[in-house]
Amino acid sequence: MAQEFKVKELSSLSLKDGEMKTVELEGVEGGKVLLANSGGKIHATSSNCTHYGAPLSKGVLSEGKITSCFDLGTGDVEDAPALDALAKYEVFEKDGAVYVKGDESTIKASRRKPDLACKAQGQEEIVVVGG
Image: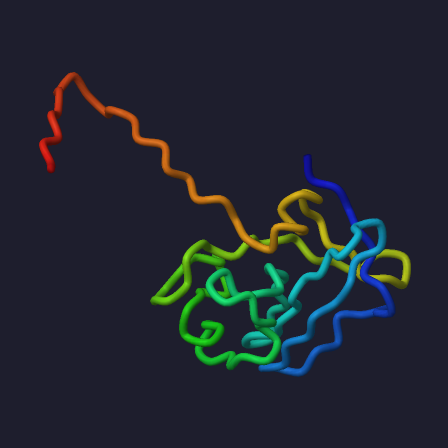
């Protein structure tokens, strides 16, 4: 269940356009989130690359994409070698502090679990044959 976590040592969302910053969250041991300003909009996502584990704040933010692998607006994988999508979080200011709203286990994992559910949409039946 999503909870609000206070960002340590940050009192406002005053990142410059194109700036990215990894921040720690109070109440989440090892919990880090990437804050990024793209076109004047602040985004909060997983802090590390899902492929290599490197901090995304060391990457490149260009045209709404981080290091050309992830879409900043959705967290979705845009290109290899990323394995899983980034988790996205709501970020906001409240009472002179910055908060991130998210699920603690997702913040710790620093990735979004893929939705691999496959459901039939009609009455048709499909047989998959492979070797």
